[in-house]
Length: 334
Ligand code: KG4
Ligand code: ZN
Image (cartoon, rainbow, N blue to C red; front, side, top):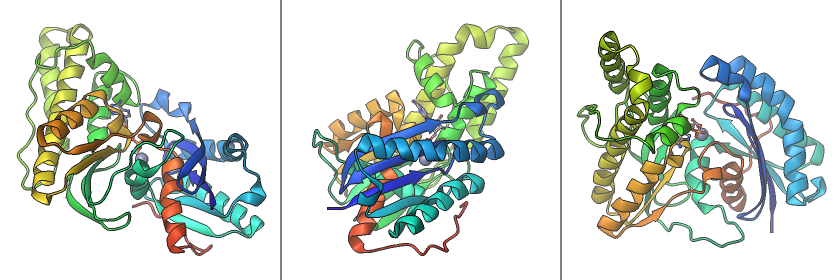
């Protein structure tokens, strides 16, 4: 039995979680509202908000988990990638607490955390993937098709050559002035829209790689031309625009992933990261699984966007291997 306290502070969510082995006891997330008015994350404000949130968030995670400080066996923290100032807050806090308690530290790669979130166990004992499986990792900063042969043997089959899928969605929302982060807003508005109302082309990229930066430009030019004739165009076609751009991005994601999975020979597929909360992507993954008789794994909503539970589960697997981190380790941005 091991109790792990996990800390995540790589971007704009301050989160702490407590796990007993692979079972989640608590997962507390403080999202930072301060960035909304700027239409994106402001790094300096993010690190300040982390500093305000970290103590109450860790405190709440321990309380909700019913665990005392003296019961903690190790402290896992996100070392990178992410915003350096944000990471520093979580990393310094983890080091301080580990030193005070005389407990070991475990460093976790944020992306590995997203992917391993499928192994978080809850009271309901839901099924977890078996190796090998392919996971599409889609977040605000990353888009990768990964083949997992074990928890830590991960091969990148394909990835974006420029923007991440979440970035493209957020930019589309920004162009339409819908608010930040755009993903959940586009997802919601798209429910009432016709996804075939407008067609946006995706680029032809070799192999299993993606590209999303051109899509943003074509979307921008399309709207510019329309707005010249109809100033209310966006307002009147908001739902259709959201549904169409969402479908374009999701279809592109799934098409490439499907090719990569077939070539890999894996028979289990998963999605992870903030964009895996998208309802159309979740539906399309299910459909793809049914077409091929692949087993599909879709994370619960609370484990899609940034959270410390995923850091805790990755930390747990490292704990089992005895992989501890030196207290002098600095965070890394990339
Ligand atoms: O994993 P995450 O919380 O942070 C990063 O590590 O980047 O992902 C954030 C991204 C944002 O781009 C956000 O718009 C997107 O996930 N997102 C969604 C949805 N919920 C969050 N995108 C599409 N549909 C959603 N429902
Ligand atoms: Zn993330």
